Image 1 (cartoon, rainbow, N blue to C red):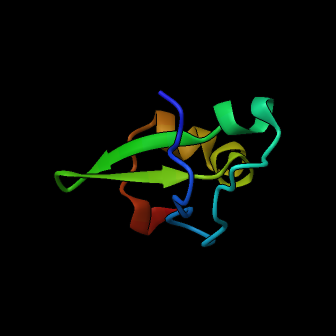
Image 2: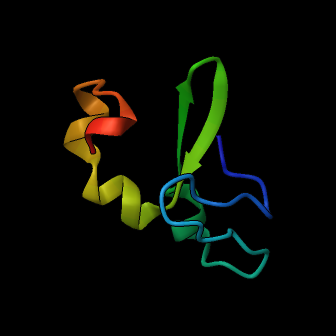
Length: 61
């Protein structure tokens, strides 16, 4: 699943743009939290990969 254009990162607010590098566009991570879908940009996803994999609540990162 690729992040839709115009989506913003839930951590830092970076927006995905239409002209973004295709490899970077595929690196966006989707996370279901409290019944909602939120997106993390590649930088935030990379920074918090251990927290995400451990299923820690976002308040702990």
